[in-house]
Length: 134
Image (cartoon, one colour):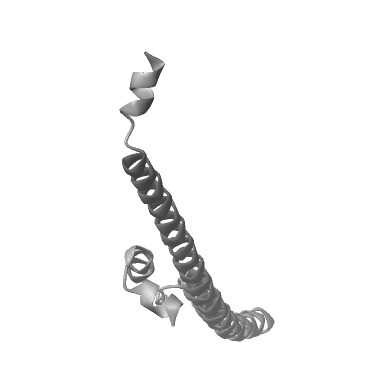
């Protein structure tokens, strides 16, 4: 019985199936390496974009708070003058000026340069593989 099973095996077909499977495994492995490299490169790009925007944001905040500091200093001088002269109008104006400066949202004019939809779309882009291979 075992002889008839061995005789019915097509060794060429078995070899062909094994070779095809091996080729498919190597191809899949190469595709996965390429995809990992693409994702790694995109992650580095996204990180650099975020880092660059962070630097721009910090410069913006420093500038905004420098302006606030200047406004607070002017309001304090006005309040001090109102107290020295016992002038409620100057004191009230200084307090109102300080409250207006305090209530100003420092982020109201800030616009991030990051378009997160572009970053997420680039992770999905298959055209990025060409950039990696070059």
